[in-house]
Image (cartoon, rainbow, N blue to C red; front, top):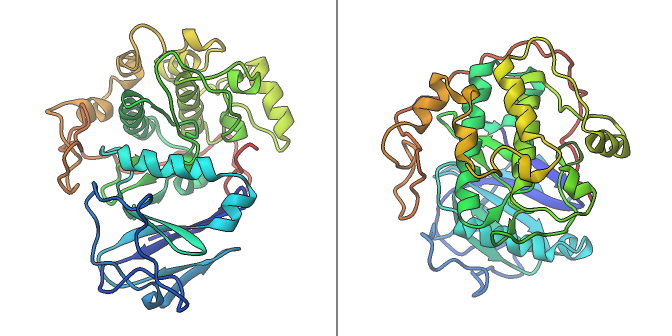
Length: 363
């Protein structure tokens, strides 16, 4: 299993695998942490009784602001965020939005949320443990064969359909924010940049990952749900090719290439894949596939998703993924519990990715 601590925008996003035990959640011997009224989740199933953080003795790794530890019991992921770093980087609203979006998301393609706690130094989010790790780690090795990319993209489309149906624009779609559960299904995680929008409303904040930013975000024209479809096109390209279509070590060059809107398709890509990417990455948001009159159904009906991988995922009666704990509202339209994910059989990339850590979000 892979556990990691990521440092993004100066904040600690520590993933701690933890289990259920007895006692009260506490971060230090100086005091105990109890669920706060504004951060607790009384309307959600709570993983109580809680666990003493002092009991987490096995260190799996360390980061700039904390460490990752393991307990032996039922596994969860504990996301630990330092309050001073949140305040210093002025990310309080992003933090509140992430917690609120997590509490509203009850679908198979999104990571399950069990509750939140805080003490004097940290905020804690108790989340589903996705033991398959990040999709990014698979993609760093090699790009994906088309059937696998179709399946992963179909999982992402289901997640976006659910979020958009609940008035949430994701805004940070990239391989680093996609994780695999124990069966190989892809889940959307990390809702720090998510935004709650009404239909017809636009937001003007500038956030995301440079290679994935939509042109309307760079031009400060205001953006809405259409940015997720642009990012989906970039994601499909990266899964198939091994790199984003607009890439450079200099973010300003990336932005210039995005605004120019010119990129080429490798010869090995199928015509259907090129068609889908081109329609998702149209410069004008109103012409973008998924943002037209047909909505997200237009993406599902595209011929690239005509194979067995997506068809079996979307076929059958609605219901949560096999193995998911039953939960009211956990149903996701078209999610087929009997569809097995294809095995990872990566092909050789046309252009190897440069080694290094995950890309930093845009300021």
